[in-house]
Image (cartoon, rainbow, N blue to C red):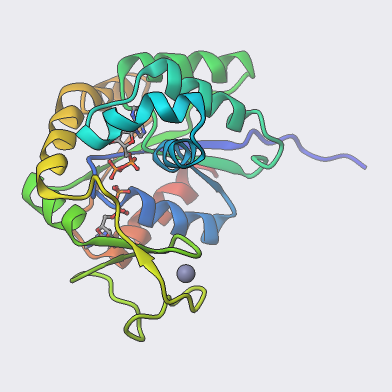
Length: 226
Ligand code: ADP
Ligand code: ADP
Ligand code: ZN
């Protein structure tokens, strides 16, 4: 049996907190069979499990700062080596610093791969604060909701799994959100130019509705993975 070897797509979703990276990554998973890798989710799991990485990351996350490259790369490396990534990955919230971007480029080059596309989700700073402040998720399946912009079809019941318990993140308050936004502008926004230089940058207007952004992203994914 001969099979054509295709390299799995490596897609990056870049954007400030609240841009819609997590929401869109989950939709892309369902539509294209890609696997979402969220360093924020991995770090929250490490904090909850009380691992050494989690203990070191906790206070930084609560203050809205960026966790050290060393810790983030340690956590992500393990996951990138897993065998379930054949169809490709969506990196959600990684890389966030120049050091992380360079480490990723090297890690991929070592495997004969490169970033397929880095997609910048562009939103106004004020919209980002409102999105973060109204965000909550299903405690059972992690589906994301919003007080104004994305309500479950039946109040109090998750559309995806029927769960009735929801949770909010401790760092999703207006004050911490501002610190996170500053970290984004200072350390993450410069990566847009990095991916521009590599010729893999795509941008999308993330002020649009969730469905409109999903449709724009879907077209980009189809084009870059063709
Ligand atoms: P990120 O992962 O970039 O931090 P999320 O995907 O968690 O962002 O979205 C933040 C909040 O805004 C969530 O409550 C989500 O339901 C909501 N949201 C996401 N995309 C949009 C959109 N295009 N318009 C309005 N609200 C949105
Ligand atoms: P959001 O997209 O809403 O900013 P995330 O879940 O991606 O939220 O991240 C939550 C927090 O976890 C960040 O504020 C930061 O402290 C930490 N974090 C997540 N990813 C990274 C990363 N790649 N580098 C450094 N810190 C990270
Ligand atoms: Zn659910």
